[in-house]
Image (cartoon, rainbow, N blue to C red; front, side):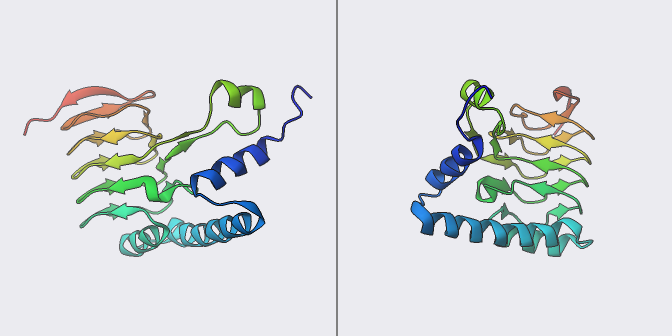
Length: 176
């Protein structure tokens, strides 16, 4: 084995530190928190009604504005849901994923080169995320922007733009 350090203990300690928890009681509190968020996420993930999905995601700590539509099978960060903000009139298509953290977990060597990144994601009002998109940590999607199906967004998207691809690139400006 290249390195004797346990990556799972290291990850757990990083999350404990983020939530300002310590010791055995802190670990228990964290596990209870994740169990609750997992149950709520599971209910939201398979639900056919957007209103129910939004209720479950809000209960997890995701900030969601008015008149949004979230389709079934959307994965919103399981560890840091409180770092996701979805403003008013946003549509998110099936099988999209939104992550507030990036963390290479199983390789200590990679973890040292690419440490955990935890950063908020903001999806501004009027945006449309088409099915199968991946939004990564620290990204802001601009107002009234559209993210094409299957796109991987790793950088901020300006207002009134259409982006496509992996990595997502601006392909069109929307007149307003």
